[in-house]
Image (cartoon, rainbow, N blue to C red):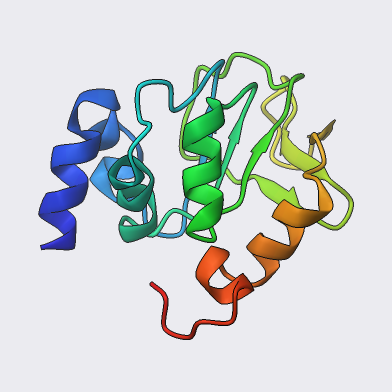
Length: 143
C-alpha cells in the first residue's frame, strides 16, 4: 500500500528515475523552490513512506518544508548546491556541523567537496531531533 501511495504521489517528478524506483535510505538533492505545489501533508508523507532519510535543496517551498519537518524528515537548504547531472552517488548530510559532502567535479571517489547547509532555527532542530512534531509534543507512535 505504501509503495503504491509513493508511486502515485511521486510518479510525475522522476521517482522511477532515482535508484531504479527505490528511495529507501536515500537523500533527495533538489534545486530551487523544491516542494512548490505540495502544500498538503500528503506530499510530504510520500517521502517518509518511501523511506527517504533527508531532503537537501537549493531552496524549499515554505509550506512543504514545514510539512516534512513536522513528520520528522530533515529538510534543509544548501544555496550553493550545484546543478547535478548524475545520480546514485554517496552524500553525507551532517546536521551537527551543518555541512553536505558530495563528490567533487573530478569524479574521483576520494575527491569530495563540502558545502554549507543553512542552519534550522532551534525550534525546527528540536522537532527533527524528536522525530517530528508529535514526538516533540510528547505523543508516542506518531508516525
